[in-house]
Image (tube, rainbow, N blue to C red; front, side, top):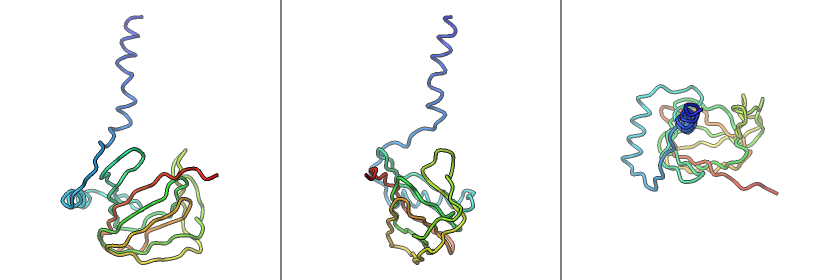
Length: 162
């Protein structure tokens, strides 16, 4: 019985470790910090349609991240979050609004849906220095990426609408 108790106490922390370490609270990132993330992104293999995402800062439910894209993203919408982004480098076409074709959850229990296209969307060219804000439940997709397209983004949890 004593050995079972010891084993239970030793194994108790494992789920927390398996979830990965949380990014520590960080309230400042310099241009050099962002450049280091860009260099890191250039050296890594990228997932088609997703690219690479690197946390910059996490405070409570808010995570600021660097997104490095070299190709189009999957069309998606986030049910509970608004999306904010600033274009650091590159150009692309952002498609928003319309309806998400073949919509399904990105993963079991996910609050993000992905699809195969956006029907009747509105296109907007994006370039360095542009800001975007996408409300919850709005389909969006980055297309026509030339070279590297890099943004700093945040998902902003929205209160439930009554």
